[in-house]
Length: 132
Length: 117
Image 1 (cartoon, rainbow over the protein chains, first blue to last red):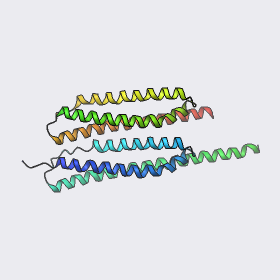
Image 2 (image 1 turned 180 degrees about the vertical axis):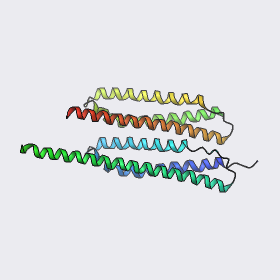
Image 3 (image 1 turned 45 degrees about the vertical axis):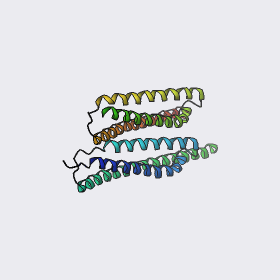
Image 4 (image 1 turned 90 degrees about the horizontal axis):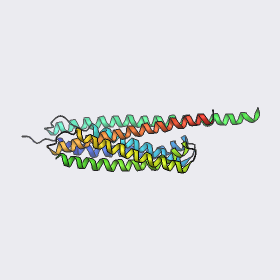
């Protein structure tokens, strides 16, 4: 019986996806504090709390998805198929992570735009009120 | 080998649930405080109840999932099934979490509308 490479594939896949998720979350949520402060118009406490909640959700969603799709049903019997299957899996996960990253960025930009419009409307109504 | 898988799975699920629950507990307080117009005593009470409810829901769900487990004969199958089951639990947690955040968002929006029509 030939030895199966499935276990090795799992052992490579798990650290790679965990590190990737950690890295992306680290970069995204270190830089999103600025957006959050903008969205909540400078209230640091609620901005920090929202940032932390989004970060936790990001980890749960992406690690959950990564673990869920880990199963390799085929029996891997050669180095070549090990590499091919692993690169397919990790590549697909990278693309998924990229899509989630851009979705998050879109949400941040949208929130900032809405809160800026609100601030502009409030400033405009404050300016017009005394004149009437 | 199923026993080993169950023990590992329950350990991981327990650790993740408690850790995540604590993060929600600490960071969710300010949102409830805003919703209840700065009523600190009621906020702490509701926050505590939410935390306990969350633990019960999650640990109960994790324990229920044990019944659906396949028989495990090899180390590969062990690693595979533990990871897949943990992934499912994490996805469920993420889903509940995003539902909660959407709920808080809509309730606070409605309240704002109510105060400043």
